[in-house]
Length: 347
Image 1 (cartoon, rainbow, N blue to C red):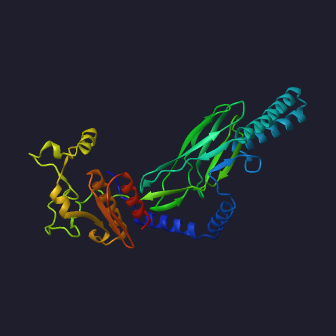
Image 2: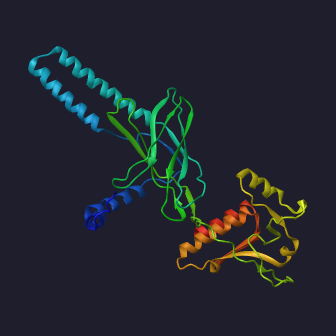
Image 3: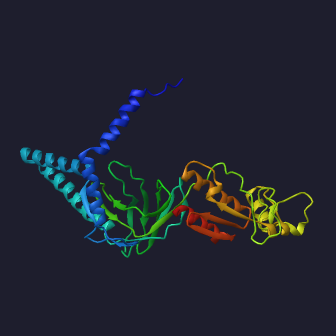
């Protein structure tokens, strides 16, 4: 039987987190990170040279250096020729490994492909292409989104063939909708001995659009509005009865079934069949209005409209979108859906 966390422990943890965020050292670190990141040039292609590649020993490297000092002191103290041999052999291997490690990253060309929009709450993958003109392969190249403080890096590893290319995908999950600049990326390698870490920082110029998260479960579509100049004033009767399309009814002629939507339904294992309704198309049209989403929270209303857009597109309906200061005329198709989702992301 699990026991609940003690309230005092939760309070203590919260106070520690707040103190860490408000501490002068943390604020100074954040200011320093903003300063040096602002100095990085914005570019979707980065050529790695000696000017933007850095190297330092790892913890294993420092331990190796300490071991070499102990071996050297012992060899001098006891006049051990084999001790000298082992010491300088290990030291020479470390120096050669340092040059190989630095050359493993230097000379690479990193190129970021344009990121696709995605929905809030899901991770997007930035595809990065690594190109090498060297006649020997490069091993153990890692890329990740640069974290702040003690944030954990989620590395994506790859090898680059000789005079070839390799692609790697780096995951990123933003915390809010809207248009975001691609975060600062970092690449590193510790090949071949792991005694040195060679790394670089990269600030791409591309931006990624984050759509609002759709409401789950989605609510029924709002009723259709009478068309301007239409002859009918009665409200629509159910979901999908807008712009010449309605839910399939038993006995509908086969020529009225929207077979394109039927093929998609069969492929996905659902039974969302729709039929054409010429009379309804002349009387009503579907408008997705922010005022129709009766919710107290603005983000919740935007999420409901996002779910409506996806639902109307799945049913093959013509629909329009009304937002404060923006009105998108009724239409259908992938381009119309993308335009509506972009408007919702930026509203």
